[in-house]
Length: 108
View 1 (cartoon, rainbow, N blue to C red):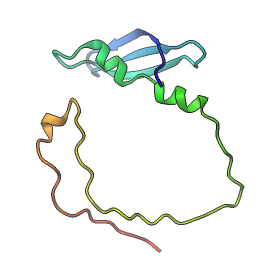
View 2 (cartoon, rainbow, N blue to C red):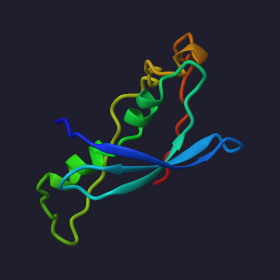
View 3 (cartoon, rainbow, N blue to C red):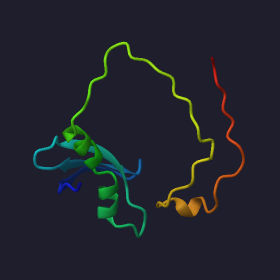
View 4 (tube, rainbow, N blue to C red):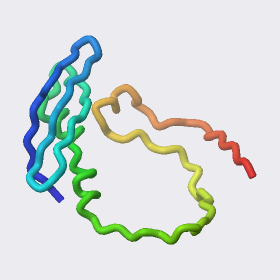
């Protein structure tokens, strides 16, 4: 789902490398979000889009089902494969896949 939105930069703090951005979309809650500053050569609007609260707005429109009080369970993880590094602005910092085992301690 795509939601058209407007943004306004309220504050910029170069020392902290962040800015305060107000996101507005018709029919959705206005959000004030702390956003990192763009890196040199990175378009401002790409950073603005990365931090847009669209997933929150979509989640707030999605019907929910309330569980009964007292329901409990146990989740047993099945996959122990290390997570893969996603393509991102930082992918050049992690040129190879993680190696080695993940140590997991379980408590019973």
